[in-house]
Image (cartoon, rainbow, N blue to C red):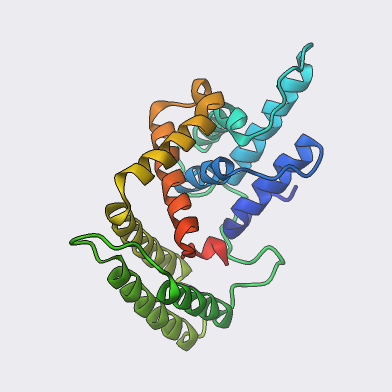
Length: 245
C-alpha cells in the first residue's frame, strides 16, 4: 500500500481493503457506506481506517472459534478509532495530515480533477435536482430549495471552468456541503413522520450487531446519515460532494 493517500479516494480504498481482508467480493451495505462517511467527516485518516481493519481481521484469525464472520465494517469500528487515536498521539500535536501523507486531489485513475470534469459533474447534479419529484408539505418548499441549489451548482460550474487551476477545491467542497445540508433539512421537514420513523427503525436493526462496539455519539451520527442516504435514494437525488464524482 502506498504511503500517500488520495483524499478523494477515501471510500474506494476502504472498500477494496476490506474486501481483500474478507477474502472476496462482499458488497458493502448502506450502513457500511454511512460509517465510512462518518469516519471521513470526523477527519479520521485513511491509514487509521486501513490499520483498524487489519487489526480486526488479525484478531479474528487468531480466535480458536470463528462462528461469527466479520460481515460489516461496524465490527472494525473500535479498532479504527483506536488506530486514529494512536496516530494522533504519535503526531505530537499535528493539526494537519501526518508527515508523509498527502491530500493531493486526484481521481482513482490517477488523473487530476480537471475543471471541465468538475463542471460537468456540477451541471449533471443540477439537472437531477431540477427533474426530481420532491415531497410537498405545508410551509416547506423542497422544490424551491432544490431549484435554488441547482442554480448555485450551475454558477459554481461556470466559475470552475473560468479558472486556470483547481487550487480551491476545498472551498468548493465546503460550498457543496452547505447546499447538501439545506437540502437534507428541507427533505426532513417535508417527509411524513411515519416514514422517518420507519427508516430509523431499519437503521436500528442494521446497527444492532455493532452497538457494543460504538459510542453513543457515533451511533447517533450513523442514524442521522442513514436517514439522509435513504431520503436521497427515495427521491432520486444526487450526492453533491466531489467524493461522488
